[in-house]
Length: 238
Image 1 (cartoon, helix red, strand yellow):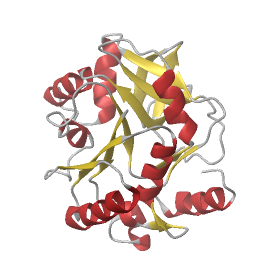
Image 2: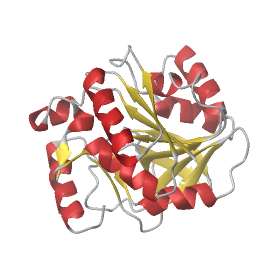
Image 3: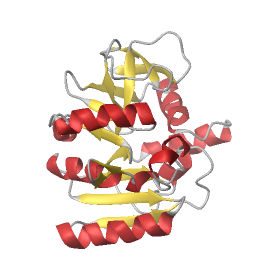
Image 4: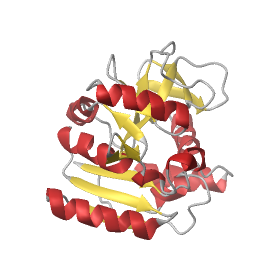
């Protein structure tokens, strides 16, 4: 199973913890290493990482990690890292053949989510988003999380400011190659984000959902979330 990790952004909200977001240590381990470790535990064997801001340092660390842990890590560079995250995913178009899992360098998740997602059936020309229906979950930052309006198994709408929603975007996707086509169309329509591509797929009836159930996840993108992550890691929950 292939995994694409987006690690190109500046991570300005965590700047007080370190200048390079993927390399910010959480209980002594860089965030991106924790993401990779959890993915490998979940059955991932082939890893692709998109870097941008301070990318040279991140790539050097990943090379050391790959050698130390005998991992397959392929580098992809996004020179336009200041623009929305969809461009980082699109940068992988010429590197990845077939289906792949997509996640972010600051999303800590239960490894079993990767394993369960891979075991599920996936239709061709669809993209499946792992969603969390626990919208009263106290560890989630309502001011920052991406919200999702779902009908059974399908996405109707997705975005940070939508008011009608019943689930959260966990930042984990099962992508078929149609993801790149959706990113192209969304960019032509003025939205270069991953959510824009998912709304394109939703309009085609090709955006699917996968319920993570009671499994944990956390987007570690600001000091408050960082503090929550320390507690969860120390408790052995993430």
